[in-house]
Figure (tube, one colour):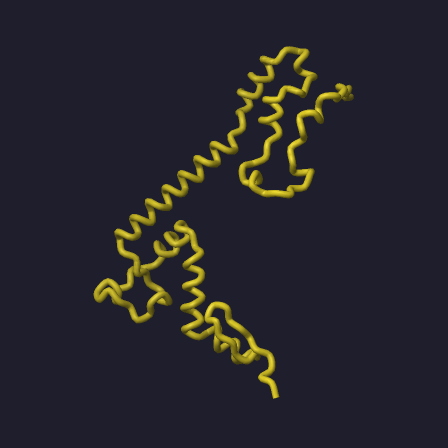
Length: 172
């Protein structure tokens, strides 16, 4: 006779009978909680870790002896002031780098800049859309899409030759 259905916990790398009682007992168990916390801590970014650690009070047991019997399941912080300062610096550097990338990659001209550029065009240029530099700035992929292959045609910028034979339309 077989064992029946088995449930495999990927955090703990254990299997057990798949019934509500066994699963509930396992999910509430200390080892499962530790393994789950370890997994999520390994994939958290510095800003999230700092937010979580800043909301916790210091663990007195860890401060006094350098050891806490609760380990990673302790509801208090085991982070030293120096570690917290280093983490704050890292978060600040990451935030600044992200802001710089966004400014560099997504800088759109202000309305005044756009109007000044448009005013500099001659009336004959107004109807022509084949100016390659304006096309490049007007129709370019965001940097986060550039590395992706097989994008649908609706997302890709139009080729420059697509605008060469366009006739001006009268509106109204």
